[in-house]
Image (cartoon, rainbow, N blue to C red; front, side, top):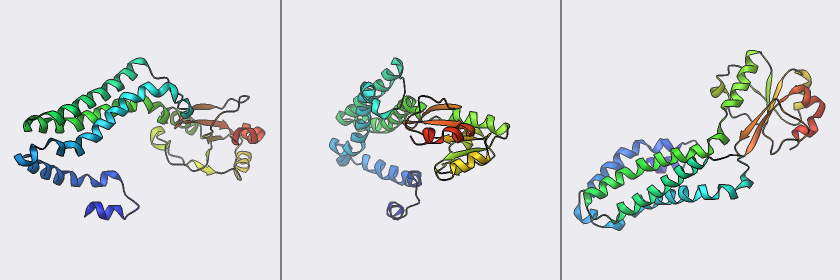
Length: 235
């Protein structure tokens, strides 16, 4: 019932289903205690296949990073990190096969319990590879320094609140669009404008820039926006 109810509501989060985990564990434990159910190895497939598939993805992903330049993540993965991600993927695949093939109900139960823990650990290692593309810490620290100096800050587009927590900001960041950005810059010539362009113009250097979600975050001085707005913003 909880799953059905949440399925018809737009404002939901995956973690809302966590209270059902306790009931699901009781049902699974009861089934594992029944020999007729526990001895059917292929009944374990629904639990094992997704974990094995994640292991395959982690195993193959480090081999493809050099061929995914179109994503523009601009990440340089050290060799040890690639090896660690691949090793986690291989461990998940071996663990999945072992949990499927073992005939002992006690070993199968231990394997099924250990696999999700191994999956979470492997995913944390895998996320290290893409963390720089989602790290707003450097940009937030730059904005925190601007706030100390009481510099006006605006963002071109919709602001999703990503900088306030990381930078412990207390002042609002104004949202502007292409129709109002020049007026804001003229009213705040000492301000800063945050943009997320696909690429940076070669002739201009922003006050701050860093990789961000496959693109870049660039923070411009308002005076540069006044003088070169068409070049800086239409990218």
